[in-house]
Length: 271
Image (tube, rainbow, N blue to C red; front, side):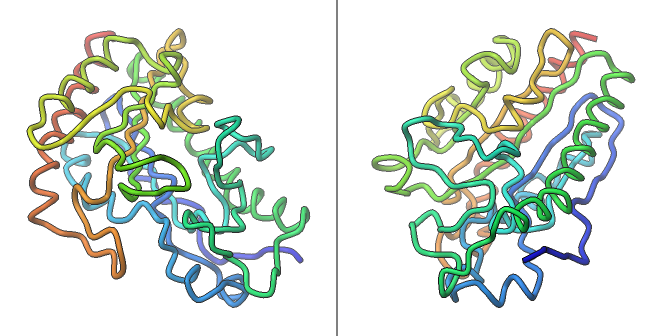
């Protein structure tokens, strides 16, 4: 079965500063023909990185470029390798075209799973356009500024037994174990996270950065990539209806803005 969609793969707001914020898991769109094959739970797309555009609503004023996915990660996961290789060998994870949710419940009713041709069609329609645009924007910003930062914005439920024990730290910075950015940048954003009263922070803990961080972070070429995986309880409801909670977000947002500002200062200091 082939795949078709009428929606573009991404939205891009181009900025003027040496920073690109990528949001590969915020999309919620599922084409109707595909949605009809989903279970009732999967149609709620519960594993979305909800509300990150709103949480990062200061990014435009700081001059950052923002690249936003439109389709649900249940359609195709933009932060997985195109060959579906496991990013965390020996640990459970979801696939390029997932067949189960984070709670390990089926996405597809009647076991109506995508075949290789359908996966390839989704990759051509969504994965490749997003990554071509990501690379093009990195190239544009690098040509203009010399040194830039790629900030991978993510969020996740704070308790997910499938992937980790207990409660996840609130701010999980990943730099591919030091390979995707200068250690000075990593320590600068980590220090902001650790100084944030009421929140916990860790560098290269359970999440060391997904495909985008590892693939595009090239410090020697002037591209420094950092992934931030934030607990959703820091700014929203973690269960249906997954509402944004302004009084929570107001607590974390100033620290987040400080991290982005520090990233910009790092890039400008290297220009």
